[in-house]
Image (cartoon, rainbow, N blue to C red; front, side):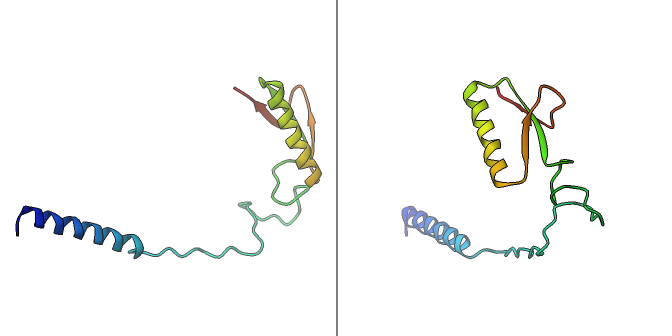
Length: 106
């Protein structure tokens, strides 16, 4: 058996072991089941502090300001707010200062 035969055997063993370890994992990962009441808050409060569970704003009317954006991107963002308004109880209003959401473009 020459050098060519030994190299063929080594390459074959590498390919076979690669295929073996690809299809047969060494460890398995089990996912934890998520409870039905999936609350992302860290603390549970007895009284409802928000207008809608798991939201992070004080009311359903949210102010925003769009700055440094071309007209097309500003229109896209305004249209996105309109879509969210139509699908939820949220209302978005543009303001000049003290906004809750700041949108800037580069």
